[in-house]
Each structure stands twice: as structure tokens, then as C-alpha cells.
Length: 319
Image 1: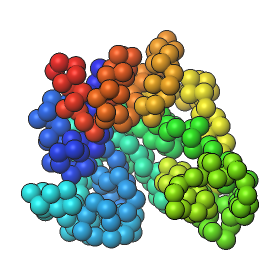
Image 2 (image 1 turned 30 degrees about the horizontal axis):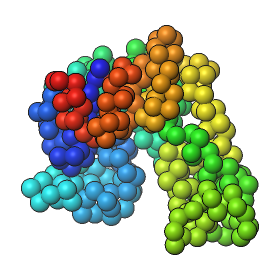
Image 3 (image 1 turned 90 degrees about the vertical axis):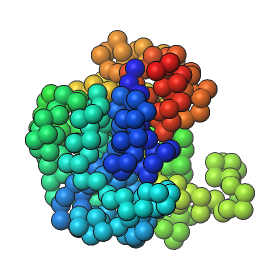
Image 4 (image 1 turned 120 degrees about the vertical axis):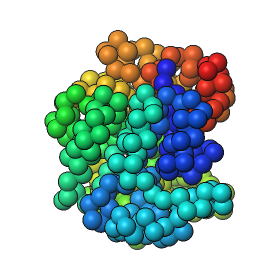
């Protein structure tokens, strides 16, 4: 079983930095998971959020900055003053760090702009580093994985999925009370027509001190990060298709080696790993951190576990 450090050893060092990758290696993790994005000058950098606000001393979207502008920012001090001066890694630096691991999982963040090459330069960088047999590509946007397979059939890919049932409930309400052809991230309070006395709405969107419409828009914004540019109707169709994950993977028109599912999917359906294993698909759940969740998942023998606490998982496995 692969122990995969989520965004590096992010509990001990700033996430998605070279320090986090080094810490994962020191702990003995088999690999790390990280995120790739494009800059304004079409360079590939490592960062999870579409904006830098939460993880640096700067503001704005990664896509709106050049690589050099991003390299001027501090991506470490937010975690601890000891990491002040930490820079955003390039993909090339990330791949160099990956040489010390058995594998590395590169998540392709769905690009904000679809008019510039994204997957092709990622594949080119992997091949230039000679790490084709060590890299696994994953994405919530499965069309990017299809493109990767077309460019490099030997590359291993993992289809990322989230909790479709939970998310579907929110999107169903959006589809009912907002225009279905509206992009998920573009829904505004003016678009919503929520009845005030609907019990289902009150139950689904119940947060003390918050209006249901406010909660629903917050969820729509969070989902739009996974499905940038997709309309409410399109997202609804994707979530419906993923309610049965084994069936969904079987219907894809390109091969996937792994399912990267939100970890509750495995706990709620303990037979999922076994069923997919019979089809030759490995399962790598993300991101359990609680010791009991880690114990239960490890007992199901997944291909690997992506966690923010690789130290706890390694201890559990006696490594």
C-alpha cells in the first residue's frame, strides 16, 4: 500500500512546497500528491487554490500572474516564520523532488482558460525528466485524463471523484431555483428564487445564523472550483453519472488505472475496492486524517491512501 503525503507533508511544512516534499521523504512516505496550474505566461507551477491569497503574502489568481511574479511571493511564512521565503515550485522542481520517491501523484487543476495548451506541456515535462513510469496523473476533469492518455498511452491516470450524493443535493436545488444554463461559479443572489417556506431547503441548507440562499451560493462557489466553467445542468449530469463509481469507470471511453475517491466512498461501500480490483482498477482514497478512519481504510487494502498525516499512517502500518 502506497502512503501518499497530501500536498507533501502538509501538517509539518507549507503545503505544495519543496519543504513539504522533503519532509514527506524524511518521514518515509512512498510518494506525494500535488497540484499543477498554468500561469499567465503559460508556465507550470505547483499550487492548489486558484488564488494565492490563503497561502502566500500576495493576492490574486495564479492564472493572472507570470511565473516570475509568483516567485517573488512568500509561500511559507503563513505556516510558520521558520518557512519564510519559501517559493512556489515549478513543475520541473517538483519532478526533481519526485526522484526520491516511488511514485508521485500530479493533479491537473482544470484550467481557467481552455484556449492554451495544458496537458501537453505537462506530458512533455514528465518525459523530459524520464519519470513516465513514476508519475500518476489525476483530475476531477476527466477530459484532461483522456487527453493525457491520447498523448502518452503508458501514463497512469486516476479519476478523481468527490462525494457525489452530498454535492448532488445542493446542485439539485440550484437546478430547481436557478437557470440551468448558468455557469456554476457565476450564480448570483439575483439568480436564485428560493421559496421561504420550503422544508427541504431549510433542512438541506441549515446553518445557524445563515440564510439558505447564502449557504447555497457558498456551496456553488466551492463546486465551481472542481468544475470551472461548467453549467448547473452539466454538473448535475456529471454527479448523476458518478453515483455508481464502478459503473461510471466502466463506461469511460478511455482506460483508467486508478480511482481517487473521497474516502467516505470506501467506508460507506466496503466492497468497492474489491469490485474495482477485479476489473484491474486500483483505489486510492483521499484524504483521511483521523486515526480510526485510517485504520478502517487500511484494513480494506486499497492501492494507496492520500493523507495529510502520513506519519500516522506509517505508524499504523508499522513502517
